[in-house]
Length: 556
Image 1: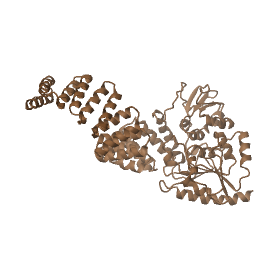
Image 2 (image 1 turned 90 degrees about the vertical axis):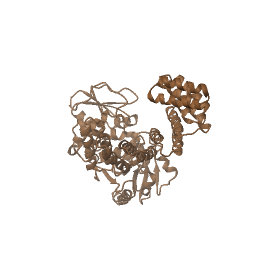
Image 3 (image 1 turned 30 degrees about the vertical axis):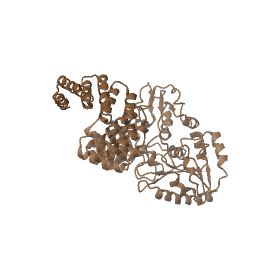
């Protein structure tokens, strides 16, 4: 055995020197003396892989595992050879078998997690990464892959926690930057700002750290530090469209609509904002050409379409034909409002046109500034038949008829911050002399299964088929209460009094610190003074709602 070990040591030394032929010759001599030596087969496997022969390497690692089945390194190397041969399922089965035999190591569990993740079995991958971390809490690769798997599985809070642990473990600028980006994705802006400041301090030359620091500040309306961060990012990387769009958002938030909208056009190059369909005609440059047809297309939030369709009649008044391509749920409402020359849903082709534009780009192309916002309302109206039907339905309700919404669409991560939930607005259902008319559809309705309103209500959420129905119901109400949702925009566009509940980092369209809206003259804004706490704005609104009862009774 002593002679075999001598040959093995000599072979390992030759391998370190780069003498592969000498290494193989000596290791083969060792195996002639000790055929069951696992490490000898392992070295031969390494030699085969380094020579570009994973099939031969896999056979040798298999022999190594047979000689020393308790050694996880041999099973991992065999699995890697199988992966290189395009056999990931066999590699996963091999490692799973090793785990069942009790051959555990954090590296082996992490490898198996990677294979499960590659097979789109995210739950199994997460469990395996957690197993690796149970075996070795500081296992950085498992922690990193766990964080990425959780992010892919749309579990932003868990992903942010994992990236924060990884940042503490590694302490590098890249790790702190990843932790900040993950916290930002989870809408945990305060944590994001802390992490990103550390990243920027460690490596101030990385534009992405500054851009994300700008977005974290934007989410708290920290205007000056956010703009400073966006400017720094753009100095480092002038072509960074994310930072430019972020700076545009910030400028519009502070009322600098013209320059902000110009920057905000950079969003169109970002995957999140890129339209899922293409339009072959040229993008409209903002010049009015009487007789030409402009296609306005909308495929993101319904609220965006409701807010900016106001430009269509202005362009028609200047002689252009204006057509629309957008969500089906808006078509009946827009048709009844007689805003457009033609319209069609996204499932079909767009109307014929000469030029086209995304609807949110109209604010830029029309040169809108704070003193030129087209704020005449109403510019929408419900179809006549629907309006009569809902007016009859709601006519007998006693007192102030207050429409109530508490949850926005979950299509955008911002819903975690903007939606108070039914429990937070529950006091608004118990105001004397007020009947709450529930307009909540889709997400948020499950709150009604566990919480009962405090006073008289009429729940219409299950009956509202589209925005034409919602508009008709709203026209028959006295006031609408909503967070930042399409319903808030709809009520404002209908010229109906609307109370908008806003989080501390509300979207740019509600401006910064205002209690009114230049876009919707009938809106009153109720903002959080403490982030995440809806108690104070809801209580202010409750008092104002109670005060409405007297004037309405006097008017009747």
